[in-house]
Length: 559
Image (cartoon, rainbow, N blue to C red):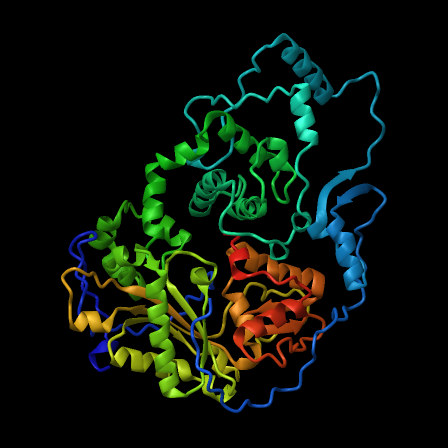
């Protein structure tokens, strides 16, 4: 490992024709880019060492006690709130009246009775529309697609919106006969739904993904946010029927009128004008190319564009020395990192990692998480979680495993190596009362190594007919007592994981993350996994302890 620890600052000479470097080269980065990716169990050793006694814990078999309901003015005399049924059910489960903030679907202020002689504009408009429809007139031209949307969503000429669908008697009957919503789709939490990867509405969802991606890259707070699109996509992905009407879209959780309008436009024309504008926008193409560089987030991508850079050539020629070491690696192996990894290769890499872990200490258990566990045929990277029944075996061991793999040239670069969990004694991350400023931190603070991987055997004996691309591999270590939480935290889509944490806070009164579960009222660690003998059983016990129905990883594909 002598020369492996030096950063290779050699500038690639040409876009996508960069030097791949020597297999021995390694870069040691001690930064913290903690992301928790998406996530079938890999073969594991049956040799189990002695289990270290767990610290005193409370078994969460029932809903935890919550602090007395705070005094709040959710119910006042000068306004009316319409709440979802979930508020009542969750309050019954919690034993107290929960705050209504996350359950409000409408809030209105009580005003005086309107003058019956003055008709509201809405009534006038409705009557005129009915007359217009009866005469068969074409609806008037509307405003541009967006008055205040992102720059790429503004058309140079007024756009013709889709016509409102004329509803005949038979169409009205069909609307009344819409298939019933599955019970799980009555919940606002996607962790309570079955969300398979395959959807009968995949083509429509693909349109929403494009808009969501653009909103994320070209952030504009004046329009519908990327998060709002993520919520709508998660609901539609869980809907088991083929959508046939805007009304069917609008009744789904988190699918407001805007998504029904997009569906109507797509259904009638086979395209969405906003998507077409995004796909032809040169700025968006540049931002997307920058965003696909490893360790470049959306804000950094916008900064690159603001500096006048338009593609990777500009990044290399004008800004190479300003990049972080991880970003330089991302540019150097740009094409390799974009290339998807087949499942059999994921399994081979995971088996090698497990072999090296057992060389340090026999008895490790492993689960391949991320996209592989959710059933993807091609994966963006390889994510594995290692644990051991003897808690001493996982203390600071990630460094030794990575060192041994690098010595044998399986690891060519170390992007991030963190021992944060070992540094705090492998305890669940602290939680000091209520909803504090620390929300969002500690999304994953387990010991981990994010590394660049290459097949060492193929590197030593090259085969002209086979490529040997660099792969991104995440090796995560979890103590045994909370390994089920770690597996769950790395085995769901983004909205599944987000809603899981929200559900735990609002319904169960606990904080969940990959390091374990703590009670919000007093910070007590809750032992949900006691008595489980393997990682899958431990994950199922977490579901049970949180009052959730078990969902296979293939049912957590919320996107």
